[in-house]
Image 1 (cartoon, rainbow, N blue to C red):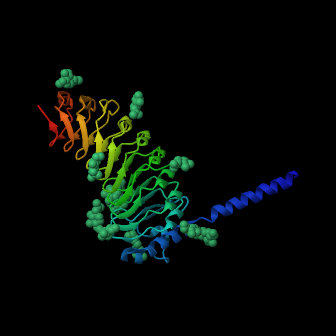
Image 2 (image 1 turned 180 degrees about the vertical axis):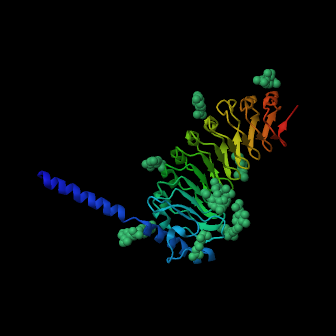
Image 3 (image 1 turned 60 degrees about the vertical axis):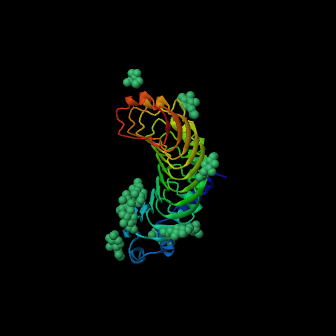
Length: 299
Ligand SMILES: *[C@@H]1O[C@H](CO)[C@@H](O)[C@H](O)[C@H]1NC(C)=O
Ligand SMILES: *[C@@H]1O[C@H](CO)[C@@H](O)[C@H](O)[C@H]1NC(C)=O
Ligand SMILES: *[C@@H]1O[C@H](CO)[C@@H](O)[C@H](O)[C@H]1NC(C)=O
Ligand SMILES: *[C@@H]1O[C@H](CO)[C@@H](O)[C@H](O)[C@H]1NC(C)=O
Ligand SMILES: *[C@@H]1O[C@H](CO)[C@@H](O)[C@H](O)[C@H]1NC(C)=O
Ligand SMILES: *[C@@H]1O[C@H](CO)[C@@H](O)[C@H](O)[C@H]1NC(C)=O
Ligand SMILES: *[C@@H]1O[C@H](CO)[C@@H](O)[C@H](O)[C@H]1NC(C)=O
Ligand SMILES: *[C@@H]1O[C@H](CO)[C@@H](O)[C@H](O)[C@H]1NC(C)=O
Ligand SMILES: *[C@@H]1O[C@H](CO)[C@@H](O)[C@H](O)[C@H]1NC(C)=O
Ligand SMILES: *[C@@H]1O[C@H](CO)[C@@H](O)[C@H](O)[C@H]1NC(C)=O
Ligand SMILES: *[C@@H]1O[C@H](CO)[C@@H](O)[C@H](O)[C@H]1NC(C)=O
């Protein structure tokens, strides 16, 4: 190829790329929203999401001024009943999705994995079923994941450790079973891990006590067994709450808990822990709540 045909070649490639980028515009978002609308029964949405007004003024929609694309969908708490269609994967600019506190049911579609800009997802208090799907681990920008109070079942995928920016993980009040994956300990920025009221079993992986950013570890009402690590608080300088009651934990209460200097709430009741309450816990001056009833303690 001579110089001008090389130039022409690259010009054609460039134009093709532009056309491809243009194939995705606000009309794509609108089509996805109308598809979602057709999957839910609700008067507010039925009248407000009207094709005769611009998408960006529809209730629950936020658009970016720069790209003029949907960046947030918040349709929480408006009594929506329905399912989520695969078209939700077409919101290529969305960073926040809140469909919490409605009555959505069925599975979360795999197409969610296409939302590469997603930072926050809240589907809490719905009736979703199926597995906590590992497609979440394909969304590298997620910081906030709230899937609480649904009917999710099966195991917590170890691939969640892929979410290196994750700060809060709420999976409480579901039907999750099996082990808490040791890989959760790889999440270096996690501040809240809430797995309460599930059916998780086996021992707590010590790796989760190695996340130095952690503020809250909540694991009550599961079927967790085994001892608490004797070095439990060596790497938890900011821990404010640890909730472990209503499990089958055994062994002694580690005196090392005194190293969690900022601890305000400690729940250990309803387990099969033995021995005495360590004197060192007197050193926890921030402690305002201690639940230890039904322990097999002496002294
Ligand atoms: C979106 O792109 C399609 C082509 O894929 C085009 O027909 C349509 O006019 C565009 N819409 C807007 C609002 O730019
Ligand atoms: C849709 O809801 C928005 C936000 O509440 C409101 O500003 C707008 O007027 C509504 N549009 C229609 C057509 O109902
Ligand atoms: C969605 O809207 C509700 C109520 O308007 C609000 O409480 C909630 O914080 C919003 N969610 C997000 C992610 O902004
Ligand atoms: C959930 O939605 C209902 C209305 O459907 C509302 O009354 C309630 O306050 C909401 N709960 C939360 C936690 O936002
Ligand atoms: C949107 O998503 C659906 C289902 O995933 C797909 O069939 C469709 O072609 C996508 N694209 C547009 C522009 O609507
Ligand atoms: C997630 O949804 C629940 C229920 O609507 C709400 O209480 C909670 O504040 C939401 N979280 C965020 C960060 O908006
Ligand atoms: C949620 O789903 C279960 C069955 O899967 C059903 O029995 C229950 O009534 C549903 N709850 C609501 C609020 O729709
Ligand atoms: C982890 O994330 C990378 C990219 O962020 C992706 O290629 C890989 O498939 C993910 N692994 C799993 C198990 O999801
Ligand atoms: C926790 O961290 C310490 C020191 O950084 C390391 O020696 C230990 O192996 C880690 N434990 C786990 C279970 O990851
Ligand atoms: C909890 O675990 C114990 C021993 O591993 C088992 O015998 C028991 O059935 C489990 N209980 C529940 C509710 O899963
Ligand atoms: C912690 O408590 C122990 C036993 O009650 C006591 O001997 C020790 O001096 C205390 N340490 C600190 C740093 O207060």
